[in-house]
Picture 1: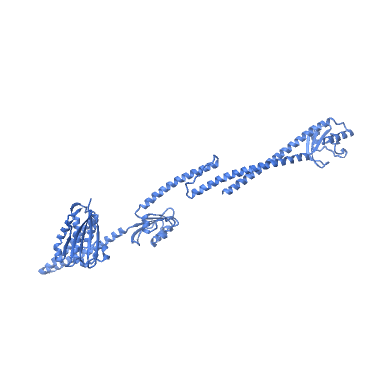
Picture 2: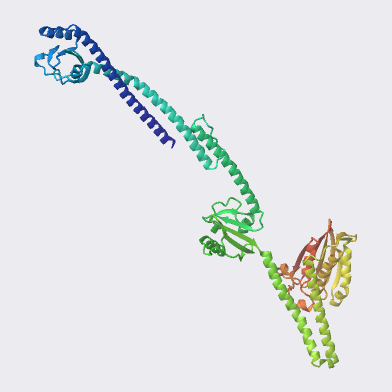
Length: 576
């Protein structure tokens, strides 16, 4: 653009200069021509008036006098009577000359005023200037214009030679001015290109006080305003990024071409995307789930109409998670995808469903046994003392099992609902272990299981909820005694570790398969359901232990080997 502008400015300057020179040449030529002709007319008039006073009245003497004056002055003299007849001529025989009454200068002189004209002389065949003064007789003086033309030609050459350096200087000035203007426009073009490319640090100093300087100042003001607007946009973008990154849900924004524009941290982790910039990456490359891609296509194509598609759930692999996916169109033809991790919610829903199903199953067995025993007794078995005793004991045993199940369910619900607040007190951590061992001493003896303790000789201070610690140990020791065959042993140990106390209950029982260990703390989950019911277990003991440990801020660790035994370790921190 600057080169084309430079050429145009230079061409325009050259055209203006050429037009100026042409007009000036024409005007000056006309002026000089008119001035010379006027000067020559005045000279001829004065000469004619002077010659008229010295001419004789007529005859041959007049012709001779006219001839002599013409030769002496170089001016052609002609004497014409009032009828237009030539009486004498300094360069031609008057007898052969035609009547001159029709000549314009003669007609003016005959009318009483000076007349003049320029024309080709029919007698001499050259261009002449004629001036006639009134008479009578009329005296006409004439000179060829060749001298005037020669003088004008010389003046024209001198003007031309003077115009050449002037034109060169004018063109040089136009060249300098054009370069200066195009250089400034080039600077503005470069400045605008840098600003358009995002370089808002570019500068454009204004030069002078002309209109171009006003444009330069305007561009500078525009750049300052753009810089201010970009700062505001950058701040808004940073706030939006912080807001989006702070959301717990994965957020993915795609532009109208289907490329990623915004991806927050939860979405990066979920989709396993790289840490570097994702600008330009296609959404189909990041979201590889066909159901999500189908929802995006439906939104982009508008097949759902004005109502956006409903959120849907799917299982996301590696690692396995349950996601709730929401896809919404954006005003700029882009697409918003929200990925909400509902794995815990799905787990809780599954646990709740399993809990209801397991609870119904657990209650059905004792209720069926109680109902069957009662119906048998009502049908006449009450008359048989042995049958009566047997069925009443069945009713009692299953009623106690119902009571145990409901008690454990109630305790678990109370703990999960936060209705079991911590009541910290300072005590010796060895005491709850001793009390629980004493509590199960008789049951262990009946089962042929030996109870052992591995307690420190010195007191182990602990600040915690004594009742909850005892409940944890009760459930652990009870499970250990129930699932340890006769001849086995259960050992309870206590170890201090700084401000924490580690309780461990280890048995030599049947053990737990490694793949089942993660599930043994679920409600009603049993490794061997038939054996658990035979032992009187409800399937809620370890679930209660897990929740109590979480309430106390500790952790639970289970280690087991099939047919060799199980070790359950509970870490209980001191409450501050």
